Image (cartoon, rainbow, N blue to C red):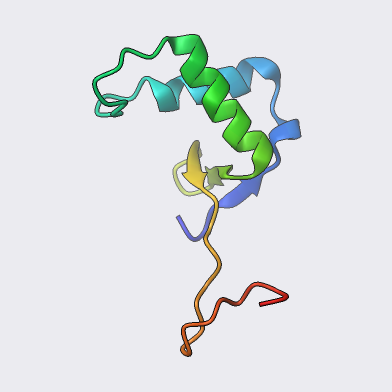
Length: 87
């Protein structure tokens, strides 16, 4: 989804955000191990990840859909060093 547009969390209404989070946590194939995790906890976990910037909301203009994706990890330079400032 390299052509996607990152949507700031604050730009979504509460109802839209909840719908997006529910779509993510209720997807078939989402694996939470052997534990039965309540829906409210799954929602809270994803919201926390969004607030911390660990997960981003991305809009794909081609399909006109939004999805949640992990935030990009720092790119490694050919020397194997991180490209993060201060490294």
